[in-house]
Image 1 (cartoon, rainbow, N blue to C red):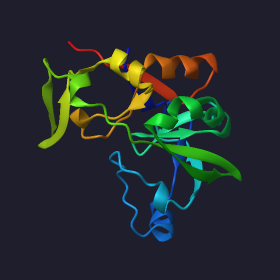
Image 2: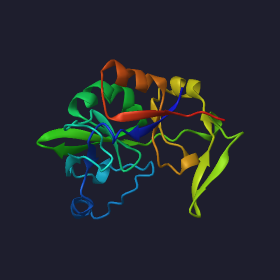
Image 3: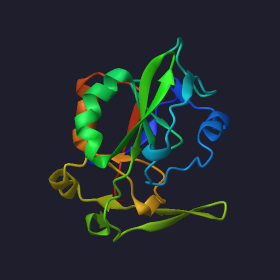
Length: 188
């Protein structure tokens, strides 16, 4: 099974990185990562966690793994140790500092190839006149297993979201991590 990774903002705090600080430290910084390398220009920014207006928790709950800026995966120090080997073939780790601890943004650089994407029943997604890509698309998980890829991006959604395999999800669950919602990718 393939899953779209969604930030669990209802049950955990969400990561926050000040855009002004990013722009000051890295003048060429742009907010959308779009599957492009950033490590060569990266200067570790300060970050924090906040609760959004939809947070339903009763107390501060920090995520182990979360999503920032739609498709960028945020790893706590513990999650980084667990996921490093699983993720390293699919992107790059960008350090950030939260309360004197080093967390990592994982910039997903692996873009699933056309041959591993089934668009037979694809539909165009348009919202308020903006083309957001295609929905009702499936991906070949066996291809990803052979390539040893656990997370990826796809041109079908304009490289916005990150997706994962069952391997990534099981590693997350076995370690009791919190912070993500795994939305199954199903063709209707």
